[in-house]
Amino acid sequence: MSLYTPYTPQRAMFIFAHPDDIEFGVAGTAARWVQGGAEVSYVLLTSGDVGIADPSVTRAEAAAIREQEQLAAAALIGVKEVIFLREPDGLLVNTLELRRKLVREIRRFRPEVVVCGDPTAWFVNSTYVNHPDHRAAASAAIEAVFPAAGQPHVFEELAEEGLQAHKVRKLYVEAWNGGDTWVDITDTIDLKIAALRCHVSQMRDWDPEPMLRQWAAEAAKGKEMAYAEAFRVITLVGDEPPTRPIEA
Image (cartoon, rainbow, N blue to C red; front, side, top):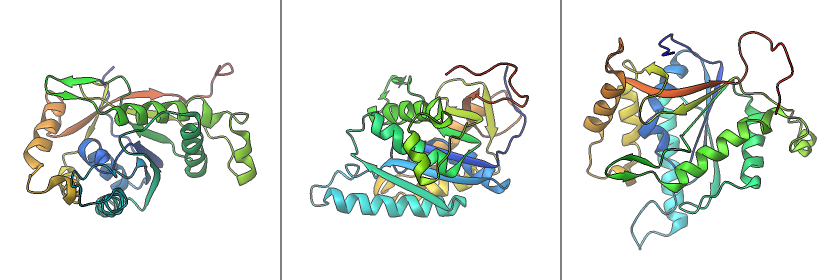
């Protein structure tokens, strides 16, 4: 069923591969939730260190530039915490060790909602193949959320750090085409555009505003809003207590 009801979680964690991924895709939702009183954390699996195609710029220099751009973009939205896991850009692999790192962050921050990409999105349109880092990051995020983060005997050594199992209530998966839940970003699209412009090394002389407005208008078409971001939402823990144990 299509959902339009406004919803703001108390705590939300956005897990994506690169600096600028959140701004391209879901920063309007992050901004709306922050304005609604949510605590929001960004977790970037890489620092985008191969994302500056200039041989005179080292990978370390590129990483430093892109991390600062991401911090500026997050600050503009009102996000106070940005975590960089500093996995290798362009070579991201969904490993058990990466899952453990994400489970640590989830158990530490204890989000009600985790937002991530779609690991099944390969061919978004006729001109773009989804980046393998995007798919790896999405797979890693989902597998960290369920069942690992909520199972006390998975990565149980994290308890020694004071990090107890935590069940994420909802998983918001970015929907490139379609979806079942739309977040109205009419009041926050300007912030989303401004946040993306913080990624100067990626934008250069290009103005992303027309494209972002077109995407958001297309997502909102037929729904009582001007601009939207679309998601597929999986409710892992419902409003009512379960009537039987949840199987892993």
